[in-house]
Amino acid sequence: VKMLAKTFHTSWAEEIGRTYVEQYVKDERYISDDDYMNIIRMQIEANDQALKTCNRICFFDTDIIVTYYYYCMYAKINGKQVPEQMKNLFDSEFNAYYLNMYDYYVFCKVDGVKWVDDGIRRHSNYREELEESLLKIYTNDTYNNLTFQYLSGNYNERWKYMYSFVNDILMKG
Image 1 (cartoon, one colour):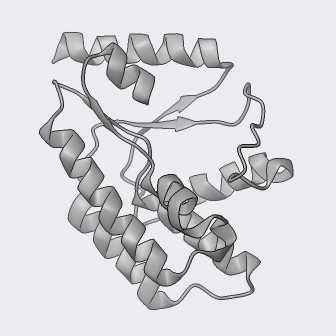
Image 2: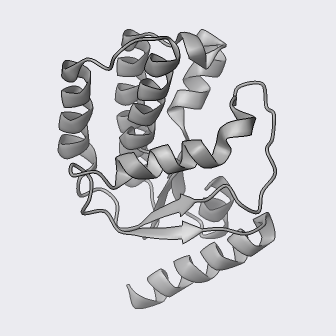
């Protein structure tokens, strides 16, 4: 995302959840509900800032659906049910801030790229299963109006595709 933004001389919003965990939590398995609320608020702020400074196009590393996915995953790992109020909160935040924010969703598939152990990511043996779980959330009744471009292949193939994809968008617009 950052490389695309720099190539097209525009802005981007990074994944705040990752930055937040690195700075405050250190281990994503121990994120609290309050931490998730901070991540949501900070992601909205980062997205708003990126939109204010963009040049015809803006790139976003993540969205609230991914944050919700991690919330559900770690609730399950820790033996907790996802409270209905949290599900409703994520849905209402999506509808208030994200519903019409993005023109395109690009879903990066796990095939073609190796697992990178960066000290934060976990579950290297379950990548395909986790990908499928995230896609199920994206395609459920709440979010089923989203249209995706699916991105596969090695890093070079992904870069070439995205460069062409973005160029086509800019040429039309």
